[in-house]
Length: 166
Image (tube, rainbow, N blue to C red; front, side, top):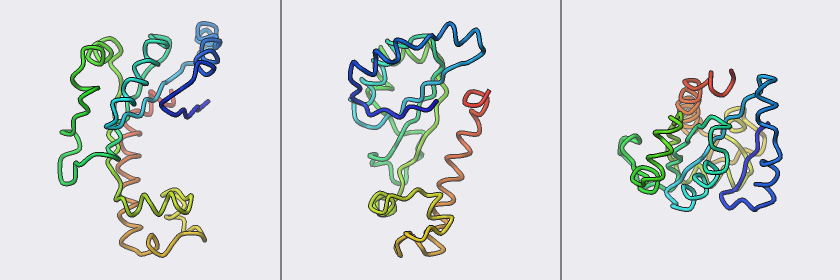
């Protein structure tokens, strides 16, 4: 089951998750991986750590450092800091205790991102030459850049395949 949640999750969602019989499902060899997508917004880290407090050791963790809002153009993405995640005691304790897997999602060219969102398309759609692909995303060079972006992201996910697909 994949459950994509916004950062500000309400108590009803927490209650839903509280009702999941984690121990019983573990006996059936069903495990859970919590994927926390962090942005430069301190709220994303705060919300993520609230979930960690709630879930504890009942799940494994994959942290995605989403650089979508970062001013990291030209920088090594691994050098971009998220102060709320990299420099707080609570986050350090989380990393020490749970040893989460981590990947970096580089920022996508804002023009490409805007066009994808405007047309409600994914990179996969564009690469498959979806009929609604706008002209701005149709050129060979743009599709090549999107393919390279997708390949790099998939490569990072592949490195954690055993966590995600045991």
